Length: 281
Image (cartoon, rainbow, N blue to C red; front, side, top):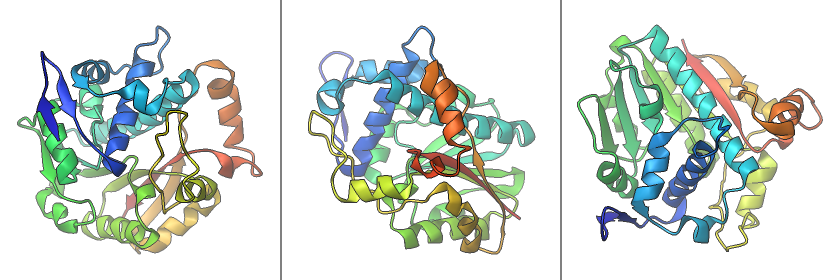
């Protein structure tokens, strides 16, 4: 929930998986404050300054390497949405469980429709901090409740994003969600990210903790880069599955090492996340 606090701040109380939206926001804002930033996100900076929440005390310092990696992942999603809007300027962007993502303020073209599908707990916070407008609205519903599809007009094109969502679902739920999108939105596109199996396993054992004691919620679903072809088996309408590489970043790791890791078969499955584009025919 989100309540008005003293002054202009808002007190936000989230737990479990919904609380990870605050971590994502914190990382984006940290990178956006840097002079040589890889992501311009003034809305994220504004939200972190407005929200009454112990970001540093909960998540620890925003390490530059980690914050930049998160920002580059976000830019990968931004590029996919921009490409869709270039082709379908009056299409619909459906964001599944985007939390406090501020992508709309970074890439919106002034003509598209946006539907944010959020758990009720997160939807309340999002509406308080990022109120709906004429072209963007928040639907309080689980992404697994496929009735959200009835709220989408596919006539001018549909792009669905699932940023930071699928890893928190069970494998059968991931398959059913992808299949449900493919079945309803022929000609549409789904963009999602995935963590490798080793990372998923560590979260399930409760091993991913910060020095401050914050524990990453369990991630039951993981997928290695070499398993991408398996996504096609979710539904016959899936016609294309490919990885979207993030842009090069600042410094040795994000500028040179990370791009190299994606090309080496022995270590390509060690990357913390990958972004996948899936088209439906």
